[in-house]
Length: 196
Image (cartoon, rainbow, N blue to C red; front, side, top):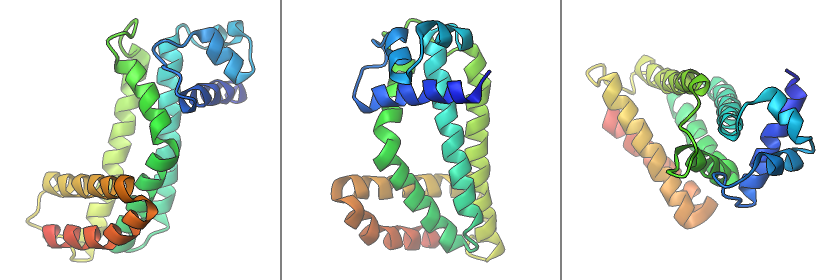
């Protein structure tokens, strides 16, 4: 499989999603046109539209996880990692989140012709495991620095971090970049207090 061709297909799907095209209604021909390829080429790589959409989501998730890993690796301290994660999540949601939601909705919509293809389930679980490992990395950094109490369970720490990231996203969506700048430091202080 040519990675270049697969990327063209994925970018074609994202282009349609950015235009607001309902993915559960889109035809394979429309994806092929958006990708600048023939319909037959898509069927050389995938057996159904659902498979194309699932593969696109996996491609996007892996790219996002790779980028987040790089950002966290460049952030030495617990506080820096928290700030990097906040900025990354907000930027991702601002720039690409709506497209991802359109694609994900098509994979779970009642109108979907079939449920998520079996071959996509395990890789999606692996992406979730990678994200959990990244969150654990932040928790471990906080513990090493003495910023997280040893009595706080990993489950509790993950809950606090996820809730805090969601609150920053909500503030940003209501108030834009200024909302992130105002709320980011405040939320990080709340995380540190909740986990101390």
